[in-house]
Length: 124
Ligand SMILES: [Zn+2]
Image (cartoon, rainbow, N blue to C red):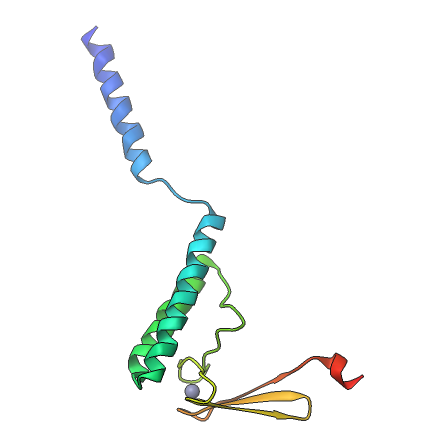
């Protein structure tokens, strides 16, 4: 009689233990991650505006790490310099030029140049 109640107590404790280690689904993790990445990039842009480059780099670093850990891509609108890790804010710390069907973005901090083509349909 007393043996069975003991077993019951152990069983309840075990289930409670596994309940505390509950995992969320990958989709839910991705949703939280992309929300946090956007928020961190907004903070990073604000830091660039205030001239606080080190803080901006740190925000971008955290955002990228969240992306890596949760396998979430960085939203295409959120640009950062691949050379020095600063968020690119056009008119503040990066130069944007359009030449020969390409967009050229130059980092104002380290001089890294990134070129990307824009829509081919415009040429036709
Ligand atoms: Zn740079």
